[in-house]
Length: 539
Image (tube, rainbow, N blue to C red; front, side, top):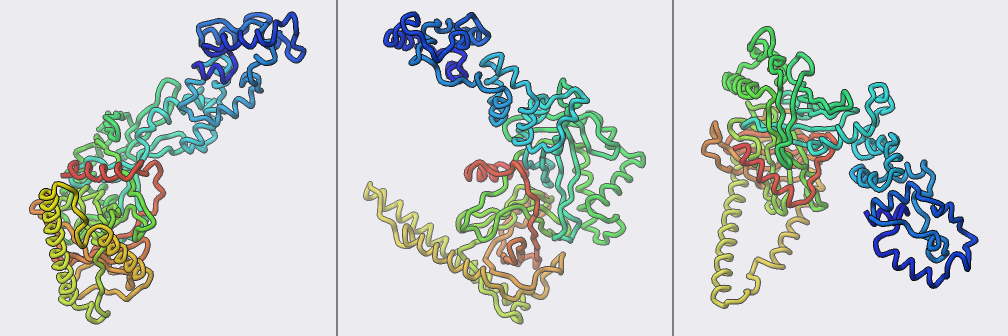
């Protein structure tokens, strides 16, 4: 507070009186050499002013005597309090809203200026993107300061991307400031198998300020309009929602009508249109499992993957085809010589949070010509050869590591880098990466081998580059999971595919082109920690 006192000029800081007395001795008294440039009345020497009282509150002392103020050498620099109020409004409006309460405690003048709605209107716009005409709030008696303090600032911790805890299915929730509301939008993939279509979204809850007392939380689930809800911030990067009127989720036609409505929204079709019996079972299972939550869910924060210039393509969120399970959301991230595809939404076989594919960027694949590529056995032979090569390299790495540890123990001092590691290993990796980038700049014909099943036949017929990779497969309930070899196919900046050799299946992925706000990871370590945390949540 002493710093604030010196800043605004309402009073001296502790210890300044001794320095002022010394200057008075050097200058002489005001009676012997009056200051013709300073009026003692204007300087506050003609009595106790509001600012003097503020100085006493801040410093616990008294203001300087008029003789000290009158001395030219003792005059304080220009004070903020001497500036016009409209200029102070501009200055205060440029400060973060979280700093303004402390500023209001400096003096009554600052407090009065900080009650100006112009300041808080600017903070709402610059910090939270509120572009609505906030002057309309005057009709309801709600000020811009109320909007900032009781709505935007209070619920700032839930803005961003979240994954709901819905067993193996997961999900993608985006909480945003939308006008004078905070809305939680659940993002849904397009209807199967149209992977290039835009995402669908529906509101799950909203928060707004109806009166000056506090913000109102409303559940948006169901088809009967907004109704009473509740939000609780459990801990950092985790919150929960609860519906207090679940009867609004019920339909007059009972569970059958609810299921038909859900099926049209989720799949864009009726049950009679789905002839595959196994697919019907999966759909019915998902409806029964997800509808039991009644929008009473726990959410954990997720971040978009960080990017670097060395990445093959821009990392991010993609929609992908997964056979009878329909379209699912996958996060593509790069980790040195590896790329990982992590499920944000999942299914009973591979739950959300699991790493569905892993791409080995150090092992590009040279596909055969277009005629031989149609032969599945030829593609399988190429992939299995690379798989064996990767296995041998892994064994050699482990053996070198054991020898290095043994030699270090024997010599009781750090050993020199072994062959294949250190600078030479880095050079090899850099050379492989440079070759990969060169290949990725060109395109080559591509066609799926005969016998490989694809939900979407409208896949690109040219690709940039292919890599060896592994895909995660498992039985129902995530039983007996194993990683099997496959082919990662990069088509362009926004689409890639994966051929599952063992399943003879092809998944096509297309980028989600949504500019998500408040979703960037604060650091690479925070993103890696997030990836580890969402896997136990799903399993």
